[in-house]
Length: 178
Ligand SMILES: Nc1ncnc2c1ncn2[C@@H]1O[C@H](COP(=O)(O)OP(=O)(O)OP(=O)(O)O)[C@@H](O)[C@H]1O
Ligand SMILES: [Mg+2]
Image 1 (tube, rainbow, N blue to C red):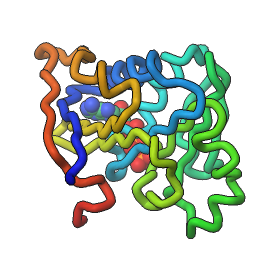
Image 2: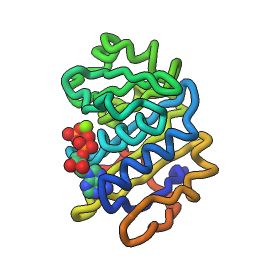
Image 3: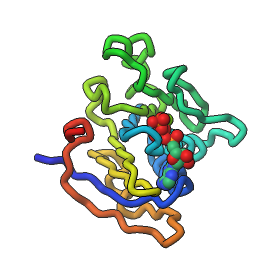
Image 4: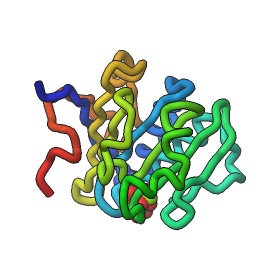
């Protein structure tokens, strides 16, 4: 069965941040967010909103961990911000302490997650960002998470007004041909 996903448009980076901040309100200990999408799709921007929504102060910079591979922030929960772009193999994830942390403690948010989907626990919430002209389209597979119930009610600050979420059956990001 093709999994259920919700999709909407994000008009600018503020809308991407707002989505991250709203998701932050419902994430709990051990939850994992797998971010997918091409270069410059807005993955780090989403993480910035998530971190602020979890209470990380504005003066703490939230940047792409492309070279550090894992950044850690303290909010209402510990946040592990990882990026798999430069990971050569699943085995290298051990160096990151991936299995000890992701899905176990705090909230993990992982950029380029679809490069190694087998690393992720079943309860991962998958979030795909895609270029849509100058804007972005976001698609979320909430599974059985708390997000499933509230996702269609999240209202995002698009200048032209909030675009409603639509539900569709869609293959997981790593199942789509490039
Ligand atoms: N909804 C949006 N509409 C238009 N631009 C956006 C939107 N969301 C984020 N951006 C912009 O897209 C650019 C790239 O964002 P970001 O660095 O978050 O992408 P990324 O997916 O993390 O990239 P990378 O693949 O290099 O890690 C930034 O300039 C950001 O402000
Ligand atoms: Mg990034």
